[in-house]
Image 1 (tube, rainbow, N blue to C red):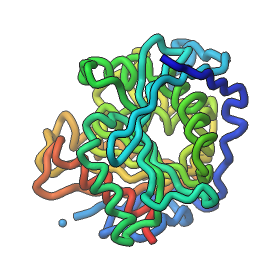
Image 2 (spheres, rainbow, N blue to C red):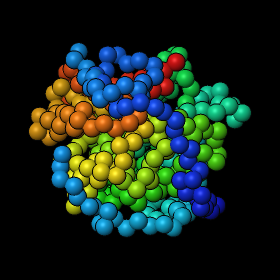
Image 3 (cartoon, one colour):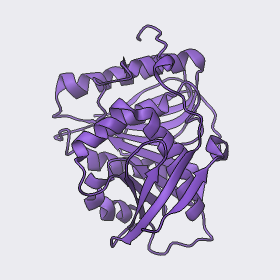
Length: 317
């Protein structure tokens, strides 16, 4: 099999910072405005239709080596292309789905949406594309991150999203993003990061990196029913938020977070509400949070509406 080597030694220096001003704004989603306002004081919006300081950094090996991505075969899959990649920091095989606008123009710069757990979302690629085909959003490039078809997805995602998220995050930041953005014309100031359930857990973990690893990388986060009851590196997500908050009150990001009305109270609804309540008490500068409870939906049926509504909110025309 032909492979070429893609080395990313530039690391995060190539990832452009975002420019925004204001205070944290947590709001309830009315249907969604076309752009999120990152100004104003602490205030939360919901849709109606503190832990003690912990030092968890010692449990994470902060590898400084550049991620080397061996690039394998690319296949046409109809709406998207699928490229097999072999990262140096995780001894395994991953796939990258690239879904371009039909009239993709390499001379233009496009927003980009990075999506975890893409094997469960491939059936929704057309619905995602329809957002810009029907004029609801501007055109964007969709990047799905996943695994080969013969993998046990339920097991492998636990490794990457819960057990060892630091290396998976390094793969994305230092391997996948540079590879994608060298091959396609991307607006590096307009990246959106999406995940559901364990993927939502990983989004929160990514957001609160106390070493600034993700600062300025993602403008928008879309979290569908994230789990907060799991631990990573023996600590809950609250420990990472607390450590981040102790280091800085600056958090330039737009966050769309949801839960289904029919979800379990103790597993999802209450922990997610507690997270929203916590953010209300913080004074993060430039953080805008939109929270929505979806009537009549449960854990698995809330994913797609959340994704479509979040993209409409942040990429709407």
